[in-house]
Image (cartoon, rainbow, N blue to C red):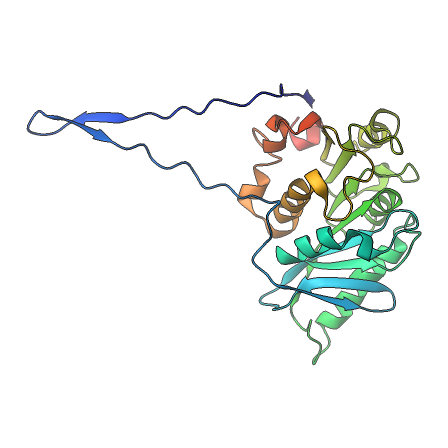
Length: 275
């Protein structure tokens, strides 16, 4: 299903309740406060630490409390994790452990999966700062451009629970995905054209819940270095799929927050996603 919303601001209407007291006098009751909403593009509550290792760079909460879900990251062609440091730090500030593959060629997705495997090992190793702090049962994959294709390919591995393909390259097989997927495209992307490249990938992901969202005015480098206008949606996607956050779920399910977000010029959901 395709959903669009005109680029106009919605009018907010508040109501005042009136009731009659036992003495017969009218009294007014202030309207209830609107339900709190979360700005997913804003920094999360965690301070962030960065650990550079041979295969991956790890962005994580400085204080690991409880178990933290994992996000594996794939860079665009010729890029390294530092190029996307703002976005990766942002995700870590929301409680995720991000394993960013130290490769400039991430299309296969295999280099990304190495980071998840290392974290699983460290989670079981006494003495490791990650010992029993990693939620190895909740792993997400994301990448940009070539790394977006890598995220799709990594998503064919059963270790990955949810995938996000950010302006993804074409060398990927969405038909092999095992979990829900979100395709993000830029309206003005001249390198990864939304109509020619991203929508066809979305259309092939028929076996899983799939979403497509096209950010108005965005080009291929909008995600650099901090995610740009995509940042909030990326964060909400993983909070929904990896952390079970119900406010984040509302961005994609039911009335679907991104479906009515004027920042997006084209939003689609397949039948498995409720569209």
